[in-house]
Image 1 (cartoon, rainbow, N blue to C red):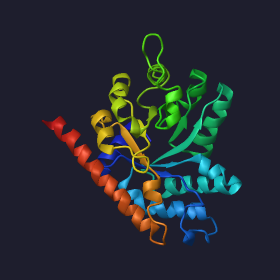
Image 2: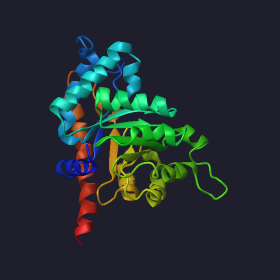
Image 3: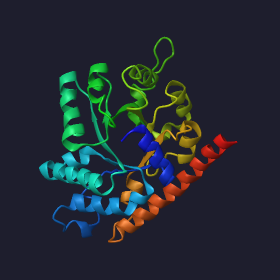
Amino acid sequence: MTRKELIQNIRDKRSFLCVGLDTDLRKVPQCILGEEDPIFAFNRAIIDATAPYCVAYKPNLAFYEAEGVKGLAAFEKTVQYLKEHYPDQMIIADAKRGDIGNTSQMYARTFFETYGVDALTVAPYMGEDSVTPFIGREGQWVIVLALTSNKGSLDFQLTEDKEGERLFEKVIRKSQQWGTPENMMYVVGATRGELFTDIRSVAPESFLLVPGVGAQGGSLEEVCRYGMTGDCGLIVNSSRAIIYADATENFARVAAEKAREVQQQMNEQLNTIWNSQQK
């Protein structure tokens, strides 16, 4: 999916919602567990219910790898289902890969060629040769971890060098020498709302993948106030608050309602930025 296609889909759906498919067999409704492939059955139901209200899906690989071969098969079936039935949806593999160059090349082959996803999250700690193997495929993106919302992010990401530049700023600034706003995004946690202004000073045009809205307590309004650009520039992820909103046989319908609520909030934010552009 190209940047132009992503922006057009945001405009068409009036949404920048990404639904996280963190599918855990210990949390899915009991009615699903009798299915031949309960992980895929749950994902398919969630996708069919929420697709009108979102522009992306983000399967978290940890939840699939935990189930071994069956879990990976369900991941692959989920990707293929999206590609066949909802080709306008961006598919983000949340795998947080990142290793020395030849290993990263194999990870890139796995996700971009074997599975055919649109984007992959990557950890940049090992530097340029751990990131650049993922860059250069038309319509496919690398999403670099920049500023996360977990407590442990304070251990490294906000530390400053002698010039006062924080590590997350250095990561963003340096990585822009490797990729462009056409093929590189950044992960920025929603609970860091006040720091979006600093991020935009370093990466004014890049899309940001923003987890943490919903169950983790991040504020959509705050994220938009400090992080939204004229092209939107945001993909905001919500996982648990949507997919586990109901534990009964009505889970898909309730997920659709929750996704629609978020989409309506996003529509209001988009109207604010787009109306201001026309003045």
